[in-house]
Length: 277
Image (tube, rainbow, N blue to C red):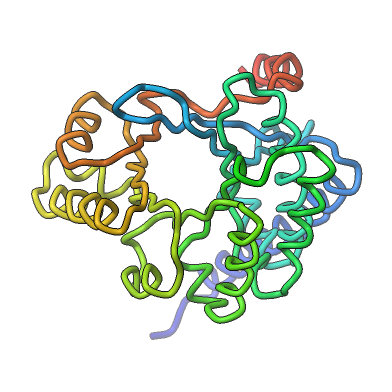
């Protein structure tokens, strides 16, 4: 099928604009990392269902550009991964998260995502050890979250990195469980401390018995393995009742709190949010 010249030109123009946009964002992200400017770490609580106590907070990176406002993580994280900046960005989040967690009076753990680009190099364990020593955070108060995608990409070397971290006392969680093709194989390959059930199952479980069955099966599997199960994406009372009924141990989602900036950044972020309103 031949594409008319006018439409072909429109497609080429759109693609050219997207490439220029990506190149510009990459350059701006590189500069933000160099200056440590415009990057913030927000935290979302993870709670024990039985007690309501906050057991951990997940660290989530946010980026603000003066001329563009807040940049969606779905826009800049892929750019960081493709450009190799994810290693530097990941270390920035780890440093900030560990430093912030030291100040928490409730001594909750801090959970930090580790991307595929940070695994398999044989360097992440030493980098994390250095950060823990520098900040004074005990290893058992740090959780690293690994997606199934990260393990699929760097299976052999990635598992080696995780073993080193666990030997240091750092806890390791398997994130977005159920979205990959070999979830059970990963549980056999490595003794995870925590399984985080992907929020898509939780959100759909209220109306879809098959999704509810998956949530219940994973919760049961966690009990048998002695692994904590976390239900992600809990946004309503219905979601909460369902994951409680299915036997999940911990919960995370907007029903309990949206991601919020660290104390040091509260005023600055509030000002940026007000400007964007």
